[in-house]
Length: 549
Ligand SMILES: Nc1ncnc2c1ncn2[C@@H]1O[C@H](COP(=O)(O)OP(=O)(O)OP(=O)(O)O)[C@@H](O)[C@H]1O
Ligand SMILES: O=P(O)(O)OC[C@H]1O[C@H](OP(=O)(O)OP(=O)(O)O)[C@H](O)[C@@H]1O
Ligand SMILES: O=C(O)c1cccnc1
Ligand SMILES: [Mg+2]
Image (cartoon, rainbow, N blue to C red; front, side):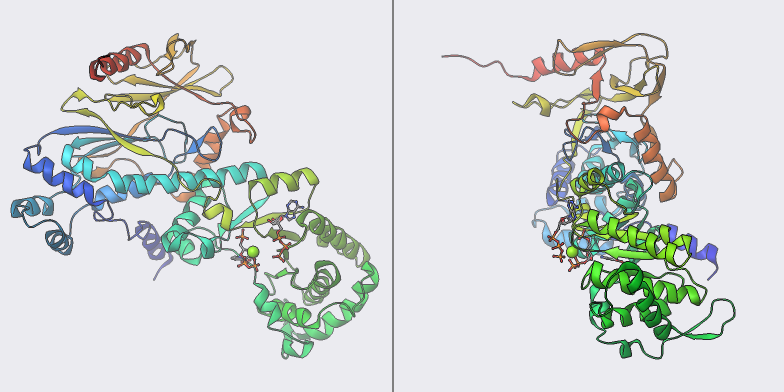
């Protein structure tokens, strides 16, 4: 297969195979039947998909999952076996014509407008606006939610890790073993990359989504070696001359010399660990990155690593670095860097100072913040559990609400004002201030004139009458783009690396106080004066007047 074919195959494979019309809640299909029975086949609806609160005590969210939604719409159809399953599962009284209707159902008549994937987004601003026949738009609810909720949560989580780690540190996602099942793991790898991680240990995610795959080795590799004899014949051809070199002998000799430089006795260092590192170096002479905490970082791991790195150097190769997976990561990383500097100086190898230090072990945002405060020398974090399970907040609460039916607005009332939906077919705009930062997101009725650069706009809090402000935007961005119409995807599907860049560009438009970790400032989301009156008139029309007795 040519590299072009492989690359095309990868693009084709980008849809998650589990995503199909039956990946939904039963009630969507039962509602579809009831709509169908009551003659609503030609009714047209508008649904908004949005969330109400930003995750992780933050004040921003990254929108992700759009590409999967579009592929879902593109491929939407019930197979014969789906229809057969529904026939067996739904009650006997379902008319056979309904199954014939389902069999021919596609998303041809659906129109989907969305915010660009990878953008920062805020509560109540629709991420998706779905228009079309009521039955099909209703049937899409659960699947669209499942495609957007975890994707956006993960991308946001990853972006937050990227923000605390800073741009000069690499971030690797190591979470597959701890993820919420196979698809949780696969989606986590994909959206961690979009959110700003540099690579994943998940090989299938690498193949499917073209994400760089990276990794080191496990403790079991080290503990499986008991003595130097386990290193086998230990021959490594020199990188340029190809003359075979005895790596175990070289490493043993170097270990004695390094031991004198860093003042650690060779008696305390593990021979099994040395054998393991030699074997790994022979297998991967250009990618030697060794786990050094199996026995004792200070008394064994660093000494053995330096010995093998220097032996590799004799063979014309440069070691890559180490991973530390336990203990005080700030202290141990500083110790490792000092050791590399000492050894580099002693043997006149300046590149030793820049060996990579990877840290892992239950790392989360707080750990990174704390390590930053303490001072550390870590170049790369390997992060699993907290990242992929989004332990700090395991779900984003996107909802899918009907806002218009047959041209008539719909409102969902609630005792909790924050849960009242914003009715009608709307547009969303992002208004930018003079310094180039995003100031406010504004929702308007679609019939209104869009806000104009340099012209004063009244922006109102959707539910608190006294909260309003005038804004004179220096730039206006219309947030919705038509992404699916006439049975076709209407926007180019970008490689993940471009969506990943979009995340960082979009985050740069936010003021720092909105992004800070502790008590961030909320970003404002407003409605136009027209939309404000429209919401409140409809609210009064729909709220029953009680009677006191
Ligand atoms: N300098 C540090 N400051 C703050 N947190 C740290 C620091 N160093 C390590 N940690 C975190 O402290 C926790 C240490 O966990 P734990 O005590 O279970 O590990 P350990 O005993 O070092 O390793 P293991 O049990 O795997 O041998 C981890 O979550 C780690 O990320
Ligand atoms: O800690 P996480 O952020 O989830 O990152 C992934 C972890 O998975 C690996 O080992 P594993 O945890 O399986 O074994 P260990 O704890 O004994 O090292 C690795 O060594 C990390 O510790
Ligand atoms: O490659 C690694 O170092 C790795 C991969 C998965 C989990 N923990 C570590
Ligand atoms: Mg662990």
